[in-house]
Image (cartoon, rainbow over all chains, first blue to last red; front, side, top):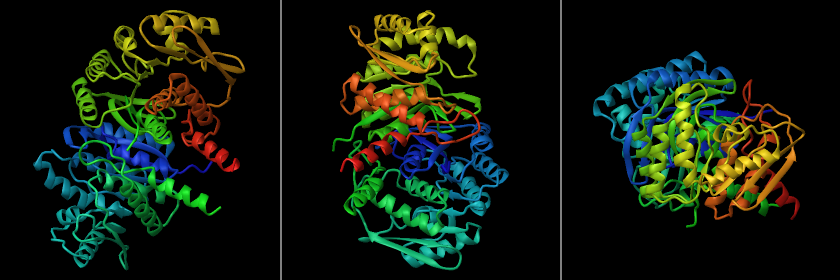
Length: 273
Length: 273
């Protein structure tokens, strides 16, 4: 039948803009069958995270077994894995089922999570998760926390990418959205060469779920047999459209527009007829 | 901005074919911004439900508060509410926020749930949930359990609809899919007149999540300011396309195709140019 399948292992955002909700919408829009394993639930909206409920690691494992023992996947994306036991559980299962197309969005801890978890969760990402990642997608603050570098320019982003690649990630995307300036540069590193993606910064407060959506779009591309570079390029186009076409949801930092990419493509298709 | 918003309050299906996953896909395809409040998680695939983890009622309430205090909704769909305390919590919150467009899919208990919960959950649906429902969408077994009737023909479906309307649901859809015969008849009752929707039965084992998807499609229609009858008609077309165009996911009872409705419409649009 040729239906590509992608799984997100991440937290739930009740407000629908981030987490597994953003991932499922992205998979759906990119014509990939979406599944989800929950690691934590949040009570959340565009103003913030009001509460978090972690899921027991054993139940995370059971969800993964249910999906992978029957349906199978063409790619997996991990998002908020919340704590060290969940990270270790997910890593063990991904190894057990020999998953190659793993996209790691290194969200190390929920907002409001206990600081004590932070250090050991960072170590678990570095030691266990990065070595099995096909692609890892830190933003600048995440790259700084993981590597210990201070990052203020593209050269330092490249240095961080080299370090993360050295720890085992096959491809590293460092996202420049948190940097300053009128332009945003993301970089992709495959261990030998760098590709830079530069675009105009879009002024908006509606960027909630951007990181989730971008990583999910890469996973959808890999699931559909694209190369990493093709998948990252498509994901850049997807997230640029999603940030540009604001929905106006909520009174705070609103979600991105998951319809925008496909709508733009359909419009282009019609105009080229 | 005019983005319509719908919320599903239901369980999670890790396999992506039912529960909030089916609902979010349906909202997305029908151009309605989707949000979700989780009542229970399942470890589930196309072969069955391997495990269930209920969410504490207090955390269900917190998720609802996060969504409704900031983002708001144009319609809510409820699915698996799992047990009496969760049902009562959801009812209280829906009353508190004065939600009018409530679609109730009366899934009273998870597969594998304790039988003891069943009786009191049925009573809670009847006494608390139906009186605030704009639309309730039982299949034949659910209508039988709720009303105590035995249903083998359309006349008996209508009798059940009258009883459910009498208990307070503004509109009742009894779905005939579980009946026999080469044709399937669903009925819609608004308290005064019946509308029958009859179609050819589609022979397939890939009907997992049909009930969730149908109710979510009705909620999406109501969110987009359709009348109940228009929303039900659109939902019938949506689910018929979703069941017809099999995806071939999993080795058991696979999910329906949430892309099919929009793809068919796009094809018609192109042909009519």
